[in-house]
Image 1: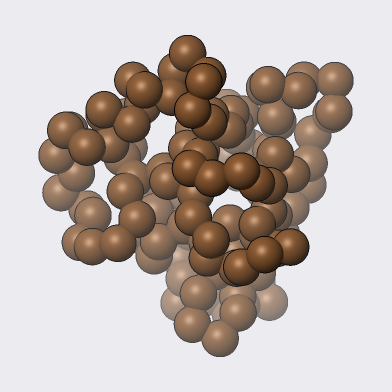
Image 2: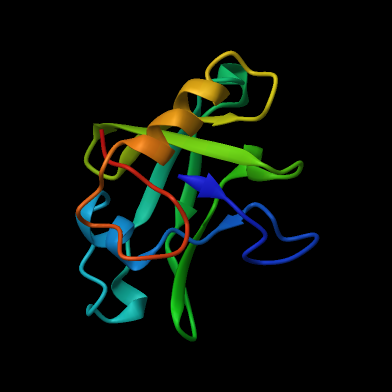
Length: 125
């Protein structure tokens, strides 16, 4: 998934996946009471010594966010998540210059995603 400036300067680590990502990938029912949203366990695989991050999914007016430590600047950046257990994910943030960035960027541009309607590029693989 592309990382963008959704929260603006200083809050770049508050990632806002599109609604279909929450539903299709995270399998979170967004019609639940916002107080019942889960806490995700996130493991930064580019910085494994940092330990797991326990991050609640938070509802803000019209969207849902999760804090991801390595999602800070610069942009462009691509977030890759891999489910390892229920509400537990390994993640990597790739930027230009990382060997995987160009390949992931190509995938986001070229592989059809029937769940994406508009906006930010994302792809379940």
